[in-house]
Length: 79
View 1: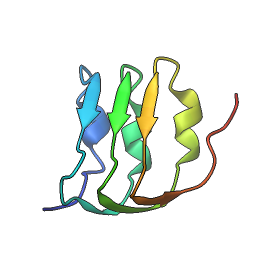
View 2 (view 1 turned 120 degrees about the vertical axis):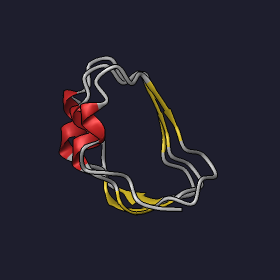
View 3 (view 1 turned 90 degrees about the vertical axis):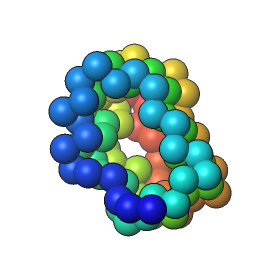
View 4 (view 1 turned 90 degrees about the horizontal axis):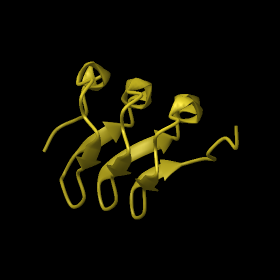
């Protein structure tokens, strides 16, 4: 168990992040969505909470996002 680091965006070659059923907790760091190469983010069944960061709108390559059964809420920008 643990939290997601605010420096996760420094993993610039990261394309797929799958933490489904992992006991991560805390806020979803906005810096996660500063990685322009992320294609898939699966955070379902985690203990993360908070709002979907507005930075998600900058992710042009993101094709899949799952936040089901987590405490993350909010809207995904259309542009």
